[in-house]
Structure formats: structure tokens, C-alpha cells
Length: 476
Image 1 (cartoon, rainbow, N blue to C red):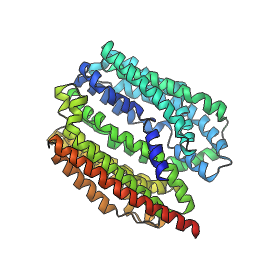
Image 2 (cartoon, rainbow, N blue to C red):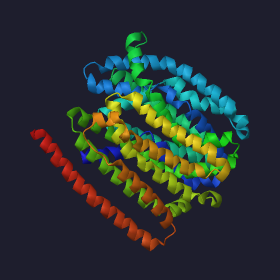
Image 3 (cartoon, one colour):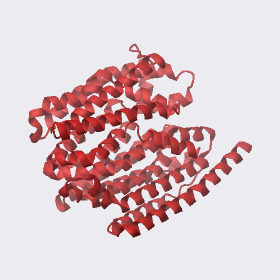
Image 4 (cartoon, helix red, strand yellow):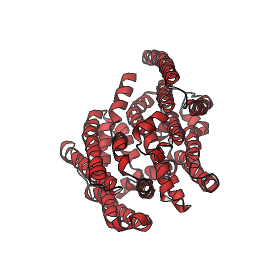
């Protein structure tokens, strides 16, 4: 199981988040031809479009996943009806997104507003939920290669297009929009044939409203839950725009988020890998094994984040060929370490999703998002845009750990996670790496080796214990 978790995480690491990774690898080349204003325009437009992105599927993905595990012989019939419904709904959603972009586009990009509008909604208008349905099927069937192959091809395409549009054609921020549009169209097109003709999941437009209403009763409460991801990861740039922070300063903050976003990509990849494994364990009643799997993933996150943040200054100097933007590495550390919330977030929320306790789930995550937004409105005018990194850290820690303290969660699981211990370790490690980032290279190499060896030792012990627990469960 541990081998499957790591191998699938590696494969999914080049999945939907590969665009972020590809842009990360292209930074040393394209940053020579970009300004803080370019980053600011892209950050603002992305922040606003992300503010309604959760409405694209109305949370129905949770219904798709649960139906696969709970109705393995009939799930395709339900999927086809949801497919047909979402195709029609996506036209309404595309109209809403277009109107929002038209209203909020920064003045510095006003001459390209119609092009930006089309490039952002184009893939959705032409293909609807094709990518969501097909990639979800491959994920829960544990066929990560289907996603990974596409990710590799389109990731390389993204890198090439960004370099071409930004560094050769000198298109600035428009290069990102064109690259995203082209890759979005190609990615959806690659999923269209297998979804409709290989898997035979063709849309049913004459869907049964009773079935759809029951599905929406489960899915709609998850919208605030998924919306919290936006409130925590993207809303800070929207708040800055509302507070009249300059586009240039928003761009500086956006650079720190793009570099540190690689940790976000790892968290998304690990979520895709561990989700099916956890659902299987819950179905078997193996809550204790599920807990050990979560703890192993948490240790992996600690090792990766600590080692990366020790070298954050050098990483920024290597990748950001702009002296002004390269100084943002301290914020990069805070944002990078904040993503350590993710494994424990899986520990609480995956069980809530599996048992369809979605009414509790959104309460935890939405409060975390609103906490982040509220703190930003209070402290950004006082301390400047940099404080948004710290408020994001606070919000993510709340979202990762609050679920453990609800009575409902304690009733549906027999495992005990010791969330206070893991939260304490996250805070201590964050403060530690923030203070050690200026050390000389030799000491950093020694510390990196010590962290990896220590993490490897505990992972080996926990994996052995997890195997013993599974054998004991089978024996009983």
C-alpha cells in the first residue's frame, strides 16, 4: 500500500497541477521578460475567476466518487445523467465567468479584455465537464498512468508555449492566458474520446430530476467546503485589489505563491493518490491503518517542506532572474510550510466525505476561508501585503485540524490522530526553517541529510506497523 501511495503520488504529481510545475521550471527564462505588473494582472484575473470556479461542477464530484464505491454495478448510469446536466449548466457558468472578468479586469490590461475573456472560458464552453469526469474515473480505478501521460505531454507543451509567447514574442502577461487556453483545449480533447467512446459514458440529457435532486442534496453542501480552497489560496490577491494595493505589489506576492505553489501541487497529487486507498480502508473498517497511512504522508510532507525551505533563498536566486522579485523568499517559506496542513486534512475530511457528512465538512473549511479573508482585511492595511502569507498559514492550519475536534468525527472513526501534536510540530518546524534559511551551504547540506534520514527511519517503522495491523485485521 505504501508503495502504491508513493508511486501514484509521483504519477499524479504531473497531473492537473503540472501547469504550475511547468511554469515553475520555465521561471528562469521567462522572468527576464516579465514585470511585477505582468504578475499582478495575471494574479488578479486568476483570483477573480477562481472565486466562482467551484460552481463549475456544483460539488457533484463527491457523488461520482461515492457512487463508484457504493453502487459499482450502476454508477455509469448516474454518471451519464450528471454529465448531461453539467454540460447544460456549464453554459450558464461560462456566462457568469465572462461577466465577472469583464467587470474586474485591471486597467493595465483593458485593451485585451475581450481576448482574455474568451481565453478563460473557451475550454469550458467547448468541452464542459469532460476532463473532470474522465480524470475522476481513472483516479478511482487507480489508473494514474492515463493522467500522468497527458500531464507529461501537456506540461512540456505549456513550458514551450510560455517561453515562446513570453520570451520570444514578448507578449508579457498575455502569454500565460494563451498558453492556458491552448493546453486547456488540448487536454479536454484528449479526454473526450475515451470518456464518450471507450468508457461509453455519453451524456444523458433526459435525466431524472428526482435522482439529480438527491445528488445535489449531497453535493451542494460541499460547495462552501471547496470554496474554502479559493478563500485560502487565491482570495488574498482579490482582497489586495479591493484594498487598492498596487498591481506591482500584488505581482511580487504572486511570485512567492507561484514558487511555493509546487508544494500545493504535491498536496493535490498526494490527495489524488491517497483518496482511493483511504476509501478502500474505510470500506474494510480499517480506520487504524488509514491513520498510519496519513501519519506517513505527514512525515513525507515535513521532510520535503523542511528541506525545500532550508534552500528557499537559493531556489529563488536560481529561478527568479529579477532582483526585486527574488527577494520574496521569506514569504515563500511561510506559504510553502502552510501546505503541511494537507495530510491531516485528509485524515479528518476524507472520512467525513465517505460517510457523506457534508453538512459538517463545509462548516470547518468555510470558517477557515472566512478567517483568512477577515484577517487579510484587518491586517493588510496595517502591515502591508506581505501579511497575507501569515494569514494564509493560520487559515490552513485551522482547516487542517478543526475537523478532529467535532463530535461527529469522533463518532465515525475509531482511530486517534493526536492533532495537537502535529499542529505543534508544524509551527515549530516553520519557525525553525525561517530562522535557518540564511545559514551557509555546508550546514544546510548536513541538516538536509539529517532530516531525510530521520524521516526515512520513522516511515520504515510505521510502514512495518501498518502491515502488521492489516494482517491482524485479515486474521480476525
